[in-house]
Image (cartoon, rainbow, N blue to C red; front, side, top):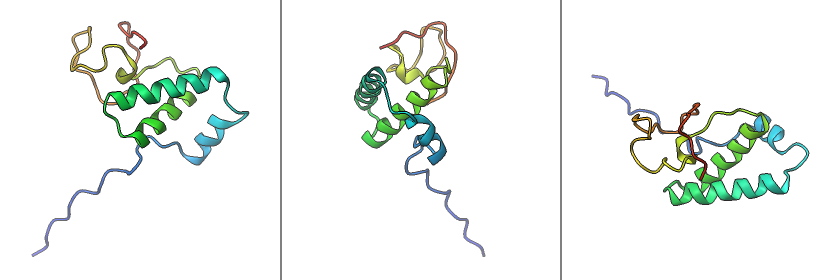
Length: 106
């Protein structure tokens, strides 16, 4: 009788940039404003109970998103992102980039 195998473990660092993304993100260095935004995001994400390594990786990934001028946002970035429902009445999704007319920057 074959014993069913367990589900594979989740990635150790799910938000970490690929080497190509990291090269793009760090190409030419960061401006002072990008550094400050990345630090602010890191602090926000840790306050919202993310692991420090995940918070750092996600803040860096969002710097790349900003450089690519992607206007989508994560609920965790929003003022309302700490609760379970947004002002739109929807449940707050886990780490889904989306366009939201109720987004309020923290």
